[in-house]
Image 1: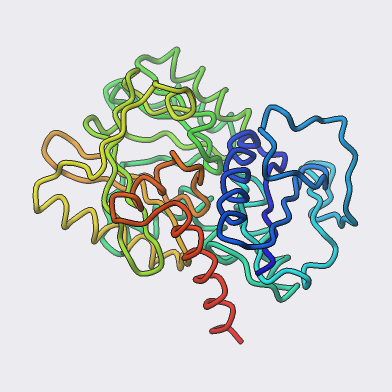
Image 2: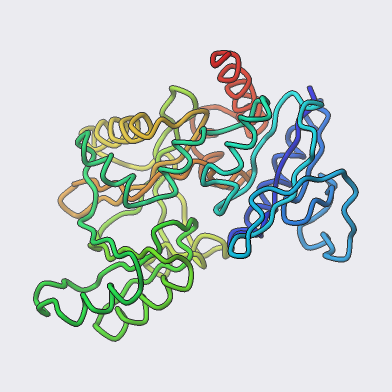
Length: 342
């Protein structure tokens, strides 16, 4: 089978995406597939055997490329102008136009199979606040959250609200970023204002969210199968970008040690969240579990990290699914989904 892996891009999660793309391409090659890997940031064809650090910005594009979403305010992305030579496109992009439905719309128009969720689910999952409204509508509990359309509104709110109405610590984050980019855990008013400025540097829309003390959990879904929950124990106490991508900064326990009621609830909530957004293929649903054993859904990641040591592969391994088997199943789900829509 001929598979095109799209990786890199120009979002703030570019480096993570390159690591995912390398692991996916190597895994697919080991299964005997013909693999081409493209950096959508500039159209270069990459080698699956190269390390991320060895990918030189001086390399010239080696493929016939087409622009998508050209704009003065949005990153330009390069993709092959003819998708039809590939049986499937494996999207290894994280954040930005690779994950928010834009690329998925282009692929739909091209009539090719691609991995992961479609346009609507991708767009909704990237929009944390609107996803939260849908979660609430089907009984999936979420942290209390206030949405702001710009930085000025958030700053004004913080100046006008009564001090006892804001319970510290409190979370501030951009509405449409992944990998906890731009997230702040504020412990006082000054840190709150600094967090708003940091979030505003990433997205015009800002969320101020109740902090849920307790345990960090995530649940992967593969097709219709809910995989074992993973518990994340960041040494810093906060699972931010550094804790996610710094070696040794977090401990992972899979399967997570949960009582039977919590285990049943987290599986049900993950499935409901996945279904209400219309997700497909695979995704990861993130939760907090407070000391009273109450779960709160934070968000869904429709294109989670896919290195051999990422969270979805860890959950798959606990279910007896190797990394290569996981990739194969994701590709088959993409092909089956495309067949069903025609």
